[in-house]
Length: 229
Image (tube, rainbow, N blue to C red; front, side, top):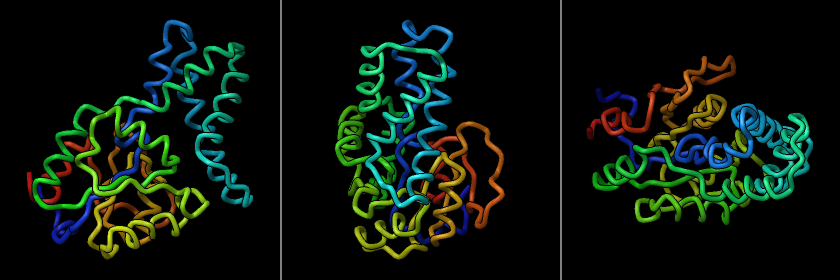
């Protein structure tokens, strides 16, 4: 059902990792080598990756997302007692071409067919994002792929979300922002976007300012939310 908060949207902007691309896919591809450590590694890797983005932002010590991702993997492998340089290289390589969630191509195509601009806004570096977009075959559905690299700080800093307004030329209140990360959804709402939290993982709502405007289980629900389904 259409949500009146999303009645005048001109652009749909998506977080990348966890929203468009499955960050668990890297560990899953190496499941045979990881055995029963595959799921714990995927979970800890993601947790430390996010923690390092926030800590680096607070410390004023920005490094690109590729470095952060590698540091998080090194921590996680160390914690789980995994010492395998070839496996580490394979996991990092797999992170460049993560699987897209199954509904992503059709959802993006539907939005574009109805005249909406579509873009990615991600912590990822441009090279990482380009590889993921190409592997998923969704480049034709995107008007822009925006990276925090241009501002040198990670989400949820307001300057990251401002990239959308500056690059797409769309007012914040005319942007529908989608993220599977609750903290990112709140951050985007605080900036002034209309926000659909794609709660893929059944998370609880964050206890920080500015709740999202809507909650969906997958991106397949987005067109109906916008009144174009």
